[in-house]
Image 1 (tube, one colour):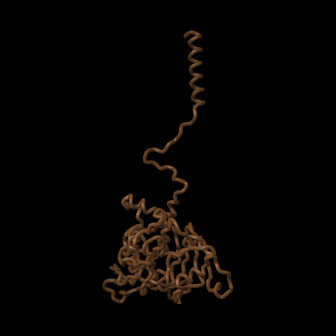
Image 2: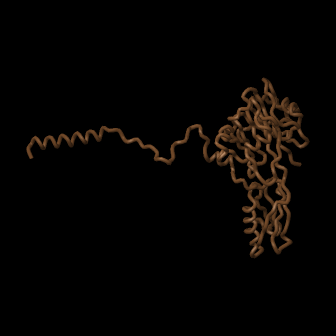
Length: 322
């Protein structure tokens, strides 16, 4: 090979190396069907799953439901139990002892659970004293369960839920007479009380027009007892009061509106209202932790200043237990 040929081959090799070093790194794109980065304004998936809870349409037990527990062949263990506000029912005959040797009544969490799940756990507990146990569990009385619908709907008030099944958001809005002409259908808010923990959680605003255009497939959430549905108005400024007042619902907001004035507009407190622990959630609050608590009894007694409300405020008056 001549010197000229060797020089040309060496030059070609150098040019190839230079081209490889100067080229930019390849851009990586997700494959079809792969994951991509979610929009920055999308709700956190874990948070959304927590708020929505179990979307299974199967009935979940609720505080106030009365259960009949049957252990076949053992009438002494067959009992009826009403689920208390704590959500846990006692199981006599399965008593244990604490660290000091004192008798301790066995309990099991019932509120928020499905019958087959609870029946399975009861079978496991009774296997300590019966071999093998055949346990059946039925609901003999359902506690009254309501949801609250407020805002720009034809009939804002509380609505009783069916005993043995759950209903969807669109069904609840239908019960309430559907939207008024000034309703913001793309800003429907749902506040939920977790029956297991008592926490109040808020969903991101729901676009009902999107649910209807999609035929409801997977978008129309199932409601739980105690849910509060608020439909914003496109025209007016409002505040909302729920719970143990005579006339819960939506009230027009005006500059200087105070909490005591709102309670007066709502007809005052019901007999067992908890005046010392009124929660106020500002518009856009995500959970109960974002609320502030007002002792209205101290306000009425002149021991604390009244609280001015803002548009979109949601006020909860709980029941006090004697």
